[in-house]
Length: 458
Image (cartoon, rainbow, N blue to C red):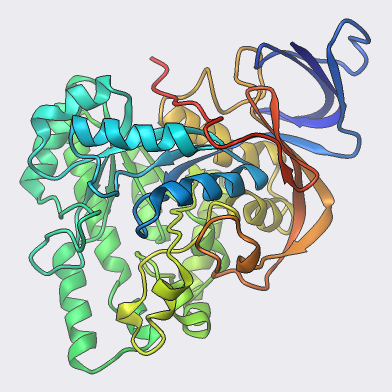
């Protein structure tokens, strides 16, 4: 099957230009001058007036770990991903049971195979006891390995059966030594456990149950200290490391400075750029996440890191708790599910805030949503760019259309949003995955199970 896309503004790694795209057998075979091919194709797609960007790769999703309906969430939530410009997800290990063993990883993989409408990769989890299985998990297709340096439980245990326990420093060192032997990637939730437990206990002893108490229970220094520790061990072991959901500009600057000696990458999330601590107080439980949303000066400083081109990627940290799980925090913030919905707002909210409002170049938008994650997670060559040989994962934006975020319209079970009521300029009107139109005219065009498993391209 040959498809030709004409008249679109095509965004590559280096520029945005009017070009035609030739797609053969699900891959891009040519980025062509307009009108270079006029016949000999099976389908012509006219993208007049539209911006074509590479499909977003969301390296941080929790479809299977937020509530007790993982298969339904995968079916419905990944449809929402496709409808909003995310063409590949990398699913975290949280599930019942968590993907910390080869058997559990394989069982979870079958859930995704049966239910995903987008392409998918998988994290495995580090629990301090499975170092001997990491190489086998890598061979089974684990794209990266997740570690927590903190836990909501004072003793460091997992807070529920779907989660992972805190990894102590010895466990972190041993895991990174092993990962370095096969060039595996560790992804770290980097917050200092003792600081969090101390700060949280102080708020609870004072009887605080309000949203600002949650912010005070997660001070920025906990993130800054833990990031430095991860980087030191990465330098010692030579392992590749990725820091998830960075909310602190100081932590981000620490990672940027370390890149001369450490193979490190990091992500931030739209909520750390578009919301501040006052919004957390206003919104309440629906804005509870970890690390917490930061004060305005920290948010502004993080934008400066981004505008300099130093943020590697944007990810959602999608946690689709049910509305009831979030509303449980109305009386006490400590009872609200920890995390935000995000896969359906990741690409469009960032497109609106970064490109439309702040003038970030389209090529930079594509870098942070597609090529950056593809390179850090070794999907490059298959995913992440509009270039010959890559999968034809394409998202068509109509920058003239605007819409209002409403959680009630989300496809997944997490029908709520911390961005509720915010206006978004730019709308996804069509999505292709491997050359197939999966979303068009506000309708899904494929069935659950269309997604394919993707692994490291090395």
